[in-house]
Length: 293
Ligand SMILES: NC(=O)c1ccc[n+]([C@@H]2O[C@H](COP(=O)([O-])OP(=O)(O)OC[C@H]3O[C@@H](n4cnc5c(N)ncnc54)[C@H](OP(=O)(O)O)[C@@H]3O)[C@@H](O)[C@H]2O)c1
Image 1 (cartoon, rainbow, N blue to C red):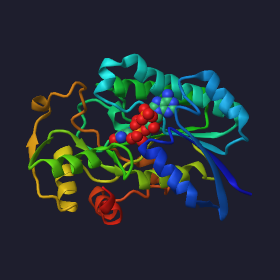
Image 2: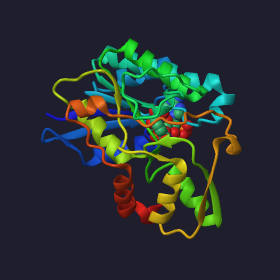
Image 3: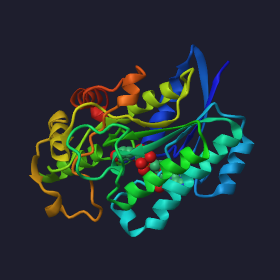
Image 4: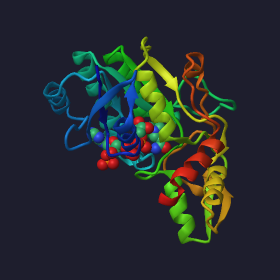
């Protein structure tokens, strides 16, 4: 028996990681087969295209929906676009998974939370998004779960990888170009590598008892974006000064929560929390992939 998976949003950073993982994965000692698609093959905003894609392919055991509109600041000026991809798109994918009897792993964000938190946030906390991006991701979570009961939503934080655009790669590139970079020091996150997230998602998808609902899935511990940037610059041995600034001075179009560190309570209770401390995860990542960054 072999396990069949589909990765949507396959050209993004998490989609690329999932593809890389599936290429080598074995599940219950059986090989894995997988299909993958981005916009061109399966635009999640197009209900007919999604339905047709699913009807043209043999049934998938699990679908990993990494398709998303992730430009947090740009989303403020493009709420309809963000809503179509992050919310309506999630509903289309969930409906197709329900029709075919496939488990759905849908990805979401710590930016569904608002202010007022000061210790790691578990899955029981009430979301209160501050941005268009966060609001559309929250609606996407709800629509995915309403349309298909076998949906697990994995909320993560500060995602980085060797692919695509992410905070780690932009800091490395700016720090190499400039002697001094400014980074906000009043927003707390838990930087998470796509490698650990992809493995956790696969593990959850293959459990003998699949439990839907929301899961928090991020590295342990916490830091500000400034501290994360400092650790990146030091880890890559880049000769640049990292200077702390405030969100107010930075003036990004989208408001972000001051504290959105996640507590992986559900994964931990199920014995599936394989995430490590963020600093150890970062150092392992830079040790393996630092020369490609
Ligand atoms: N990045 C982070 O720091 C972070 C933090 C917390 C949670 N997350 C969540 O983690 C998940 C993966 O994020 P990521 O960083 O891998 O995002 P990403 O790199 O931006 O990848 C998203 C992919 O989805 C594609 N896409 C956009 N619209 C689509 C559509 N209509 N149909 C099909 N594909 C479409 C994008 O294509 P284009 O690039 O061509 O638009 C891109 O290839 C998302 O759910 C995100 O909300 C990310």
